[in-house]
View (cartoon, rainbow over the protein chains, first blue to last red):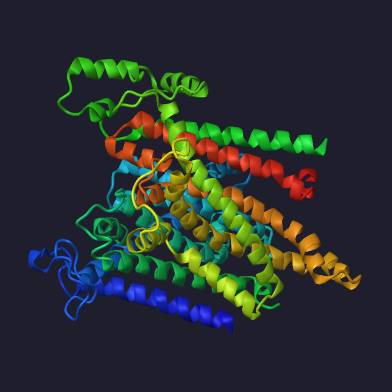
Length: 270
Length: 316
């Protein structure tokens, strides 16, 4: 019962997020970048549902455009990290020996380092822009993917069907691509779900610090940062973007929990 | 004897990590597009000045020589000098680190004191009302971005109620009472965020332990329920949570920059971000390296203390 409620609420929140992001790519109520100095710092009204900012830009439109940016950056980052991480994980887990030992030593060293710091370090080199963030956060999260995939591969390579594939004369590479890789993807799917949340939060934090997607392009993080001087007179500017980040993370956490419960039913039945 | 072997093995594991971190931090400045010296001094810099700084930073040598030279200096605590104000980097970092360390340590302690019992109670009442309430609360806390929670607390207690100051910082050495008013909200923010993650961890490991035979045995021999929980479940469920506390400390050090930005505190995270904006690369390198070393040391200490909670680890 509880599990189904989790899945439903999580799915609804994430569904709304993706729908909003997709809509914003084609249409927003106002131009999110259009300055209108006669409508500065308007509180929420029938015309401007979430009010306007210090340049008279419509907050609802800016939040929708921010959703599009955040979703795009997070999806690209997770895809990038999972693709590179899965390849490295499968290779090390399957080949074992020295390749495995060297790569895993480096991987553990990277894991023993706060992800956001690693991302910051990479951003210094790539510069603050969309692709810099994808690269930086992607690199920061590759080590967790490698660890999960390698663990799964190590257990799969002992299975009979891999043995069978080898016996009928398939090459190592073919067995790996055709049988090991597809079967190691389930735990990665769970990881990727949580990772989407971490990446979205990290991207917002970097934008909040002024090290993410640069203004005037809106992201939830830089909208929050920009709202700070007006916190007392225009609190709605601080509340809406943060609430969006929180609801998204809540959706991801609920979905992630229900996925994990399915893999480990003991956590549900008492 | 077992314990000693564990200590040595665990210590040896930090060496590749530290070496890799050092290589990464060193490589960072070399990877920045363009000539780092030119970037630091600006386009209008005098060529003689550029040459001097290049020699001073050792950039006229080959890369491996540069790395060896740099590593030897870092190993004895010479992190170089700030480009913007000429101060030695390490003392600057240590001064800023005090601010961050107090906040992070107090927040983690508070979070652990709340989260470990909360998780235990949730596991004990699994799928009952108390569990649902605690799990829902933890998931909510886990979903709130720290910088937003910080802004909301500031809005409520600083701007609306006017109980606490909104901007600034006073060191403890100057005025103890005032210092507390400045760090109370950052600590509350971090503690609330981490309570979310720690409660869930504590609940999960308590559920595992509650299922084990020695718990059934303790109940069967008639031990009162509080004693089963306090004496048998809590110590065994605490070990995995203890490891997470180490990760949380590191996580907080990595994420402290946003909290220090919200509350305008002169901590290490703020120093790092300001130095990135100012292109003060020796300070950037120093902050990254220092945070990484602290992170490695914290996790080392956590792991070394781990056998105190679970002696089986040393025996493996």
